[in-house]
Image (cartoon, rainbow, N blue to C red; front, side, top):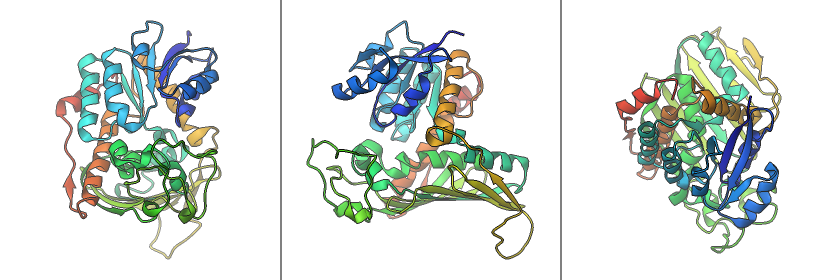
Length: 389
């Protein structure tokens, strides 16, 4: 089978996904790369042998020798770059989030429909072993019908990962309840079998708002993001704009009646996600999401707390970033770009996770007022329901 030839736009923090796509002789190769920063372009292009290089993504769109485009740029560029790529008619992988507004998401979906171009959104948590294990337990009926989902997200490296660059600027992300939570909200929807219709949220900038910042145009510190600071109050050299919340809590009502809650904190000592799903006949909870992680199920009772649970599942070992999910999602995109057919991600689901996070951010900045999530145009829902899309 001939290797698919990918063009990659953006070689920053998400370049590991481009590396996962570069598998010469095994299905796909990165043949062209783009980044607006000359130093980054020169340094990172070497990962892929001798690809075509350009500072302008438009140079990649007209190339007949590229089969598909992978976009890994900062979030505020997703809408415009995605629309241009789709109009060029090449299958597109767009790293999450789909866009930073509901309107932006809908513009991307319309462009995919109007051009008939295949669109794949990189919600890679659907390929993480712990998430797939929880999904399989629920589908098997081990806890009955899901009724409520709770998620706690401890972001132990939050100060280093999200407050030293553009992530800290709400004009470029809307907020971390969208940018960071889009993955988790998508998983909530996937596990619960529905989409959020109404939200309310609270949040604040509790720790990082008053810490020393860099002057505009000043490079990030050497060693970032590999060097980490503890305690969080010792952080220095934050981005010159810091106006996103470092703590947020969000409540959701889904279209199937499920009630869900999500909590995020960026100054915890550990980095882990904790999911609890409670159904009509039991509950499950994950303990860790990396090597050695388990998912426990309690489905007899009632009793006091039993740490050994009724069933304990070990999450399958995996190698690579995000528990091996990045490799698997790129493999799925390559197959989708080549053949079409069903995949485990969905442009509609990607839009709905952004919409939930976007409206929740509006709520937390409006004193916790409840907001309805705008429904997606039914014609777009119907279009993307076709597995060939």
